[in-house]
Image 1: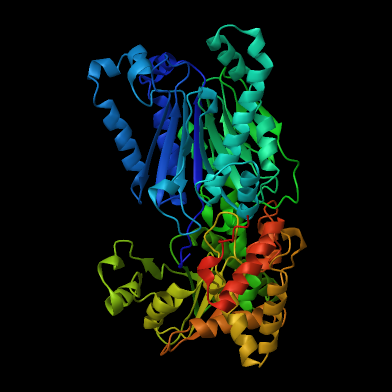
Image 2: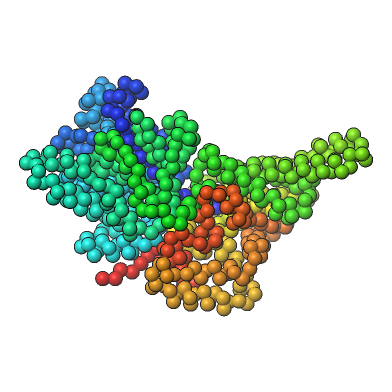
Length: 636
């Protein structure tokens, strides 16, 4: 999209199921697990440019030696920095020693069997290294050590925080990642203690007792206890110091997770095609973790699935399909093409079916697949019209007239070009704004001046800032009669609260347009009434709240809002007429039938906490304090 929103986080987990010597012999390296983790993380780099981290666990370490390791870094080059630091740790050993698997297993950091990687985008503005996953909870008992990473955002952090207080804990931070780590760590401690109390009288040797505790750890039980408190979209992966690992998906299926297991390796990632690429697999080889389900990987190499929470109103995130996930996925590629195709009727209406004087293009780079679907749909429509015209007039058409009909084509050009080399951070003030207006360029001569209209597709429109400041301005240089901006997604009207950085009402051009329409029509009373209702329910429980922000949009048709958006995004001095066409929610569901999580567009949140978030976001907008969307007061 032109105004790129921050992506979701990404996870990658690798569990080697054979001794390191196996991989040295077969793949000529004991670093097979690290190499695959690196590949999985780089292939998901689109999910994290603020930070990255990895954790590793060694199985059966010698007493007195480290068994759990972690490395983290900040910035867009974090993956390279993390793995660079890992290899720096290798450099302290002679080359011939590093080739010795037994030596590496005993002495070299990260020479383990369990690996957990994470790519981070923050959703709450917290960007220091201390907030980069994996999080680590340390203890001298291996089974009490926990490395945790996830793609998530919880809507009820206050409730979880208060629960920890009621248990007598003193959490060191309010962030949901810290709170979840302490919740899971708390129940892990209790599970270890339970097993200790159960078997302590059966053993005189502490080492044997420890082994029995590690064998008997009931990870699903502790996950069930902790997950009762969770409201949000999440995929959580954890490594336990004694050698177990797990990945759990939320019961609404909001966030995604995929896994593959054979006799050599078990792997989990946020996206299916990255596993396909990293391990050269077919689509059908990879399975999707189901809502509320957890994959358990035991120290002895066995694994099983466990239903931690019963599936609820299953509503997988549709933005995964529109924007976030890699377009190389078999299903996502086809769904994005379908989103483009379904826009054809509205496009035809807005250009008055004038193919001769219309050029079609896309805003690079994420809208390209939807553009291909739009072109296919236009070609199919064109072919149908030509067939009808020829069949109805076959006796009256000359050979040249038939040739003229058959020679007509949909006019498509690469009109917009994104200059990825342009860096605006080197300038300040007005100079920076001027540079930002030139992030996109155009192909001169792609339109006939003052004769052609231009239809240009984007995958979604959030703020509209780049459209106004850059894209429309620079497209207008080609002197089109009309500029039609087409969004393959519906109007984004409501904040997300499940792991995407869209939390402020002012960020949505659709919301600002609806508010302007109310003011234009002297309906300020609607805004006042929604504010009063929102404030009145502020202290209610989440499941008692109503999304009254829907009333802001309820006064107008989708087209009225779209026309207002076009008016607001048209830069002063633009010569062309500017129109905007949005996908419908019905079209979204038709294109992505298995991913109907549409709360961004409809305001229908799958969890109770969603209504709480939109309620607070609206109040904060009206009161001018949007930076407080996720804050809460502590009550003791």
